[in-house]
Length: 85
Image (cartoon, rainbow, N blue to C red; front, side, top):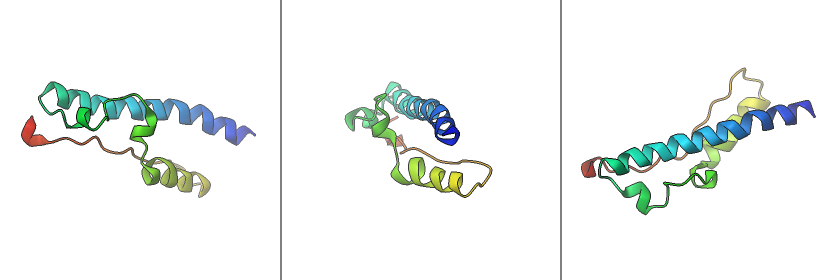
């Protein structure tokens, strides 16, 4: 039971941080003239839009259960069109 509680205590703030981080990427790009993320619906604080099944779920779970000593992962990158900046 302690492991499940530890995972929840860590997962909720990390998921929030990932969501805010990726939304911030899209917001800054939008402020600089690239509205790609906004048009694709990625300027949202809904974490489901930013979850990458492999990088946000599978890799961290494998590292946790393998007792790797660290957990690494990533979210879906926000699309940015550099020529629109």
